[in-house]
Image (cartoon, rainbow over all chains, first blue to last red; front, top):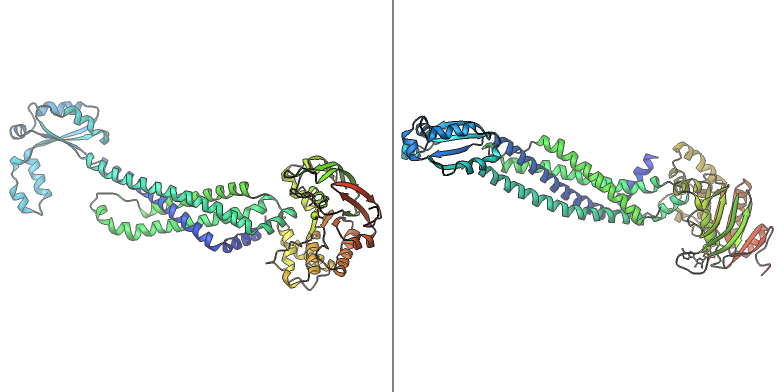
Length: 301
Length: 229
Ligand SMILES: Nc1ncnc2c1ncn2[C@@H]1O[C@H](COP(=O)(O)OP(=O)(O)OP(=O)(O)O)[C@@H](O)[C@H]1O
Ligand SMILES: [Mg+2]
């Protein structure tokens, strides 16, 4: 196969249908950018989960009575609760936090706001059992089992907050992926159209090629490569705009959330090393398959 | 070289056969006119040889291979041994004379150094040396047909099929083209030419196969156009 011949055919073909080519490149780019965005959100969800799950605890707040009278959790019901929790297969560790310890940590957390610390009295803060679970996502099992038992005022699962955050991220990702699919359908039609137009404008050439005995590779490869080149340019644009978005928008707007440790964002390296190749390969595979099928269906060899 | 046995071709969209039980043979190196009124099946016959169409019935042997039964992937090889020329030249208007001829070799994967060598040779053979950088629209009809012939012949085919190659040309230019086809024939290339042109057939005195309604009604070794009708 003469590379120079195929190459010049591809370049001429792309230039001949400039408007069509641009439309196809843009649609592909936007569709792939959304796909890439979806991947990045998925990664954000995973990273955020990973980061939180280690720290997540279920706090079992004890009643006033227990908080006031059982300083070191040596009597029932506190001691009994602790023992039963420690023996549970679901539980990794249990730490008792007395009323005084709770007050200390309250003071630490709000040391910037002395008025608040001043207002609070140790008596207002309950003692609690801080439970770490083997699988932090199974907090509801503990809640169900212990809710309402003697000595327990309230059970609080920090995971609920995380779940809400993750649900939000997930629905955002789903919207992105649906949009990406719709645009992908448009991109497919544009590729098919581009190949047909290209085949039509080049029908004389292809006719001569067939007559002089060019193989299918020679007659059809230029069309396939044309579609693939346009697809790859689209993918490069998509990857580029994702990197740009990450550098200038996400890192700017979401930087505070990241610094506050509320969400963990994927690194730029992830975009460049994982997302970009995925987009490139998808673009190549999709445009090659669409081009091939179109040629099979509409263009006689 | 070519052996046609009981070939019938009925196009899907028509009821009357375009070729009806046609049989004849062509030897290597022959020059054959295929004549007949419009619609008699001349072009259909040439398309069958090229495997552009397949016969409804019958066998078409080229060098002892049944073209009709040939698997699709072997068709390009077959076509590389057949040159084609048409009434409408079919040149690429955005390529020069040289590039038009070179195109036929490029697309079958011939190396660049071969192309640089053989294209000027064939352009000289058809009398176009010195015009290789012209665009087709800078040439006369006769010159354009020479380019088309050069392109058909550049890969040294075993046979040359010409479908009314002089159909768009004036008598003098047609004579020149005929001289060229004769010269190509003398190199050993079998030439089959479909035509309406009485004077050409009469002056050449070559074999004439006449078709009417898809049947061979005459096969003269040294025929003229009108005789027999
Ligand atoms: N692709 C096709 N589909 C259907 N019918 C066809 C097709 N090509 C040719 N025919 C029919 O087959 C018959 C023979 O056509 P063909 O083109 O072989 O004639 P011809 O001898 O070359 O005529 P002309 O001298 O006008 O070129 C005609 O009746 C024509 O209408
Ligand atoms: Mg015809």
